Length: 73
Image 1: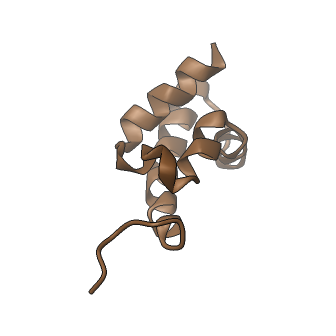
Image 2: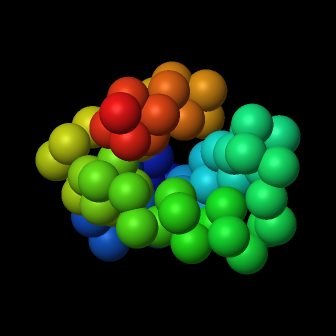
Image 3: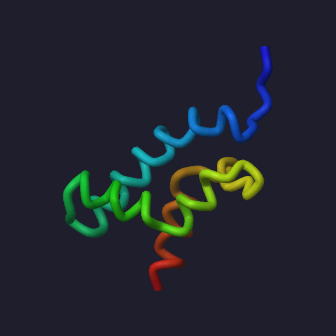
């Protein structure tokens, strides 16, 4: 079994991280699920997360959410 993360299988990790991040966004911004997911997908953090070479996939959802917040400032 191949346990290496690469660009071809990275997409398997993203939904789990995004769901946790969306819940944090909803709690902080008192918004809908759709608006939270839209905001996260449009963020520079998510754009970088989609690239295996960024290694952001190694971060947990809390750290990723904090990056989103830092980039919004």
